[in-house]
Length: 68
Image (cartoon, rainbow, N blue to C red; front, side, top):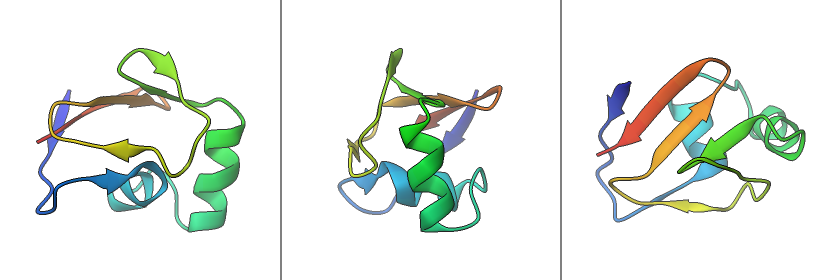
């Protein structure tokens, strides 16, 4: 599991996917999320604006990330 440090209180899911390089653009991230390809804390997440806080786990495309 890769740890990803953020410098703000939270980061939105679509921004996070761009930050870690899973998606190239916000549009890509939107459809990637809506297609059910992302789990947050073990549950499929369909909201691209979902706020991620330190301690949240994101799983997608065979990768796992821990927000720090």
